[in-house]
Image (cartoon, rainbow, N blue to C red):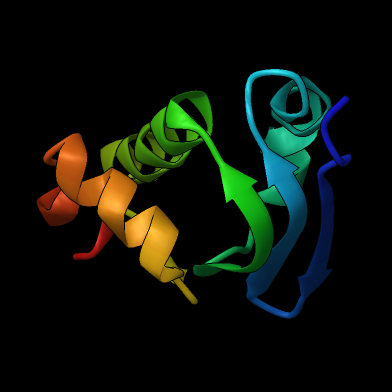
Length: 96
């Protein structure tokens, strides 16, 4: 069983900790609208593991906010997550 995903909002930064995968992200996804109202940054440095589904969620969040003319920075990207970002070719989306 994967480690639970936890999140904490501190001013304009949302801190994610635990595991962001297909098993853990639904709890966040259901509450994301209220969690993202004032978010400018998502700090992923506390994530122990991110799978392709978790990466897809980050891409989707950035896209949704861009559609609302808001920017979202993904910060604290680990080497492992960066490798996944490169493998899926989403550097321009996630890292800009």
